[in-house]
Amino acid sequence: MRLTKIGEFLKRSKIPIDIEDDIEYNRVTIRINHNGVSLRDSEIGKKIGTKKQFILKSGQFIVSKIDARYGAFGIAPDEVEGAIITGNFWAYDVDKKKVNIEWFNQFTNSADFYDICERASSGITHRKYLDEKFFLNYEILLPNVDEQLIQIEKIKSQKNSFSELSTELTHQLTLVKKLRQQILQDAVQGKLVEQNKNDEPASELLKKIKAALRQAQGDKKGKKEKELPPIKPEEIPFEIPENWVWCRLGEIIYDTEGGKSPNCLHEPAKDNEWGVIKTTAVQEMYFLENENKVLPSNFIVSEQHKVIEGDILITRAGPKNRVGIVCCVENLTKNLILSDKTIRIKHSKKLLFSKFIALALNSPLIKPFIEQKMTGMADSQVNISQDNMKGFPIPLPPLLEQKRIVQKLDELMQYCHSLEASIKQSQGQNEKLLQQVLREALRKEPVGEEV
Image (cartoon, rainbow, N blue to C red; front, side):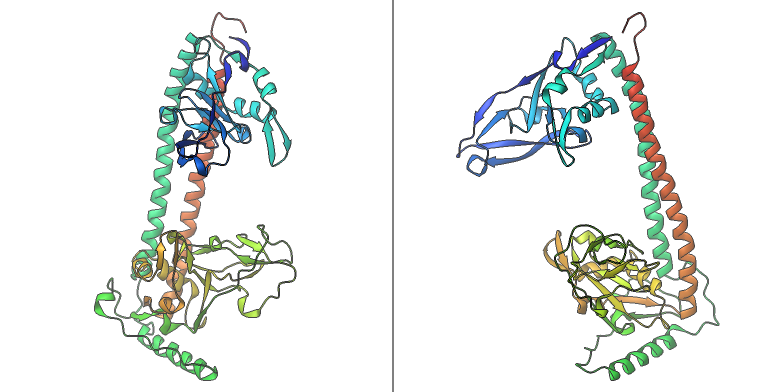
């Protein structure tokens, strides 16, 4: 093993090509964090702005001069043979008499190589470029090819062990997610806590809620709310306890209302600043208040748009996997308003527990009804109207049972959060340990050789 300049086994490859308008070319992407080199797309020449580019060959080492310090490098696979790259991507032929390509691929995924790229990059904080001369002149401890093969086998064995643990931890996270879903399902079916025959039946509670709504509508000027159709038998997805009732969301809430989405800075509000929430603030059963964008200083905040504790929020527009998600706002410390993609469900906090409504709408048994009401041309952008929200079927338990369900739910969800945090901590430790093992394996000096 001896100190060897990177430039002794990497030689820059520059095979120029002039882009012609009527020819289609394959283009390459390099993912950060050593996640590989692959085809980005195929494009006709007339749509490619940079007309002088270079040809990439499979087996070459390729690096992004802009994102090298973030792990944007790798070995070009067969699928990118003959693809084009701009001058921002550098391709190198590897001297296989000095370096085994698989060993080098492992070495480039080590903390040492990331450090080399960081040291060899210069410029302003967000736009540092790799200094090729510094990079190629950097010296590393390079074993001979035979020792590289031994190290590769050791690394493979160690990575297999860590991979098995990583797979198990990922599986555990999936189980926690399924556990959460099962808890929500049991809660909305009346299986989470015992029923109490002394509770006032939900049918009586529904009468009280409707009376309160009629009074509120009588006090409010404007058009009368559209009457909702009764729930059909085929709309009832599961059985509920005898003292529960099925109803539509619009039968038990006062109204729904959205907010505003002015042009904002893409940073969260601080101190006394006001922010507009992003759809990512609304997670399944919990609210992330830091997911917001600071409002312009001259924006006039309306009282009706302010987010307050106890609010039930639902996302109404965006990608399909982000629409129809419901949470209850708790422990609010920031000044926030609703966006035009989030809806507040206004309800009587004396006659309904906010978190029960949120858990019912998040239940995997109710989700299909929500998805049926989504409209849009593609899954990347769908919408739910406020009128359609009011038609959602929802099971209603007695008020005291709602309280018991919410208390039990909080207890079980906290258990799930603790499990998830522990598993994620183990994942982080596993990754750090793997990097340490790789570093030691690559630095280990062969017996009988001098450094």
